[in-house]
Length: 152
Image (tube, rainbow, N blue to C red; front, side, top):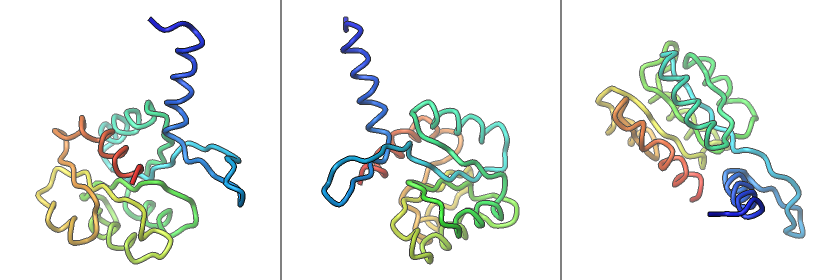
């Protein structure tokens, strides 16, 4: 059993590992901010379940209810550590959002996960997705996939 100090130390370490650490020109840590994930999903129940799952890990999730909102944020200057798109979205689908992300200089290196119930894995990979997860059966793999992609 851990004493209070050891337990607190492990909690702090866990939180830090889920944050992006910025360094100054001398390599010193200057701030820590939670990783921000852009997530587009139109189905409210799925969106809330995924958002809560990711936020329990200490990550910040910007959730969008349609592809047009996601595209606007994607084209903006906000920093995202990861992008997660459903494919079947109103306005702009997840495959097109992935293509757009890969065409934007400031998003080309941002990992993309397509999380869809549709049979679109091959198309998602061709568009530039780093990972494809099938809804709902792969929900349990989401956190591990996110950790793997942001640690690259």
